[in-house]
Length: 416
Image (cartoon, rainbow, N blue to C red; front, side):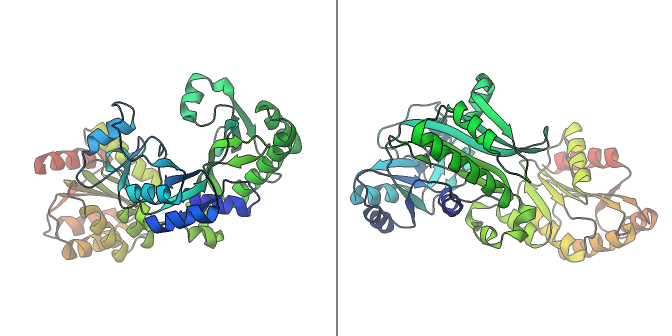
């Protein structure tokens, strides 16, 4: 689960992590009022979307050329004069109003959003800060060490992926014991690695300890502060932040779960979640309905191996019923890109004949305009396959995953 920058800063501030002051706005007038309330002489207006690269991104209207916008945002083409950037410096309430007006309701194109972009519904008006140094701080779960790892670098304000690729020695890493948090000696190592001294070193120690505690206590999967800034007076502040949370832990954090912005989520993924389905939209034309995450991944791999492209990842779980299967088909067939559907089910908890009955019931309620290939395996597979083959419906049955993949790829190409 992702949240906006302004939401992340509110959470970090409540956890004792020092952040740049700011106020969120949904209209140009609110942005002007926010600038006045902050009482600053220099401010920044930032588009609030779930994507990085906002500073280089550009806001466009509905009739703009998105491909050209992406080329500009990616640095492949020069940036024209007067184009609205996703992050803008302002020096008055009127400038804040105009900046918000150039962003709100527009689509922000960045190197991360791709050509689709992201609609801007809110902006953050933040207090301008005199920056002495820009650093990087991040934390993620590292499977190799089986623990969260705190990462810091003196190369703040740039793409950390490029730093990791070209100068990995500039990234300091500290594995974290989740039962203990950031140890004092680790915090001191971090301060030394970042070259913090005096008041900045003292403030940095507090910042790092609280940041790690927040990550663990909130079940984060990723937390990034880029840039982490140091001011002339030795303040250490989060100028920007990106927080992702473990979806499976949100039942423990109702306050964080409430921050979900449906406008930033894929509508089909939201529908699937509400029905207890695990769904991820992809770019192919072969829709997949599978039970079990491992089987779903294998199914997509075999489809690609035989020359097809999966349109989605969809795991209906081990106990899927008719209603879930019906909603799954509705979601799959809502895309005009889908040319064929593959159902690949292993009947364990739920027997294959019960699955077949659910498939047939769903088939009768949905207008299947594309070929449907079904492969069943497991308990009562003979009865289930017989039900499908004798149903009179236009269902292509398959024996084995390879047979199913070959048939669905051929069907998709035939209906393209």
